[in-house]
Amino acid sequence: MIKQIGVVVYAVAGVSHSSTEITPPVGCGSGQVLKWGGSSWTCTDFQEKLGVYDCGNKAITKIDFSTGTFTCDEFDLVYGGHSSEQCVAIGGEVVSNGINKFCRFNSASCNSGWIQFEDWSTTIAKYCIANFGGSSLGCNPCTTTFHNWGDTPIETCIFQNTIGQGCFSDTCYATRTKIGCY
Image 1 (cartoon, rainbow, N blue to C red):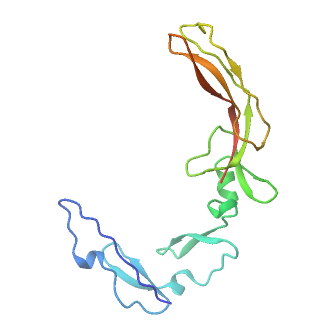
Image 2 (tube, rainbow, N blue to C red):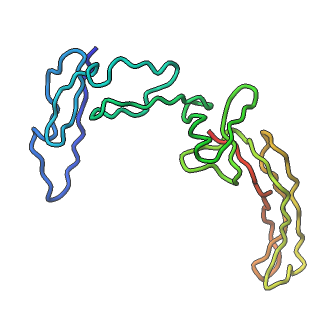
Image 3 (cartoon, rainbow, N blue to C red):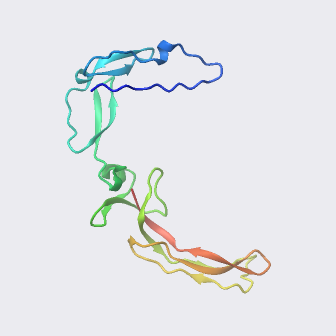
């Protein structure tokens, strides 16, 4: 099946392109794909460049047409956005809640490009007290509770803080030490 593609052109002041520089060729044959050769578009035989490869349950994540190589990766973590290999490569540990696999990081937040999975985390208690020049000015402190690894929201407590003139209510959050991400 041949699919039609579109080309998006952005205009930048002082830069111009001819239509042959940005227009892919028309009429690539069956089994051919477009290839940018650095100065012009050509059609190349997909089977000839890549051969017939099977990634099984994995997805082709990177194709290098110049060398005819590609990379397979299994996006096996929940929602299919990352793989177990990616998790481990950046210092995480693959874990499961019995239904879904996701990545546990020994940090307070997920790595860039990752999102917290549900409320999976570990916390430690945190003591919060107003501190204005070394004095709490009589405001009430609080200490959060904590939880071991589980799908549990971060604990909070309300303490009285100060900006120098009296006390006001403020929220204290437990310290997250591990987080589940996908």
